[in-house]
Image 1: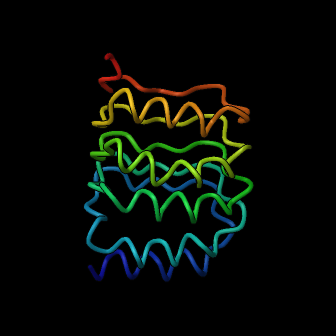
Image 2: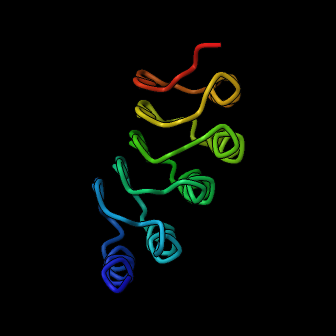
Image 3: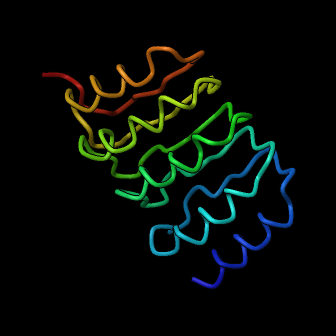
Length: 138
C-alpha cells in the first residue's frame, strides 16, 4: 500500500525514532516496505505491531529486529503466529538478547511453539513474556 511505502520512507529519514506503534494496521501486504524502513532505525527501543495480520512474515520481521541492539519491547500480539512461524523466527529471537518484554498474546501457536520459543529465549534479559490466550496446554 502507498501508506506503508510512505511510512517506510519516513522511517529512513527519522532514524532516531525510539518508539513505533502500528497496531491495528494491515501491514501484511506491504511488509517488505516496512522492513526496509526499519533497517535504517538506529535507536528503536519499542515496536508495537499488534493485530497487523503479520502471519508468516514475522520471521522476516524478527530478522530485521534482531539487528537492532537498542530494542527493548516487542508487541506481536494477535497476529496469527503459529508453531511453524515460531520455529522460523526462533533463530532471530536468539540475537535479541537485550529485549526486556515480548508480547505474544492471542497468537495461535501451541506446545511445540512454546518449547521452541523457550529454547530461543533462554539467554535473554527478559523481564516480561506475555503469552495470554496462547493455547500451550498439551
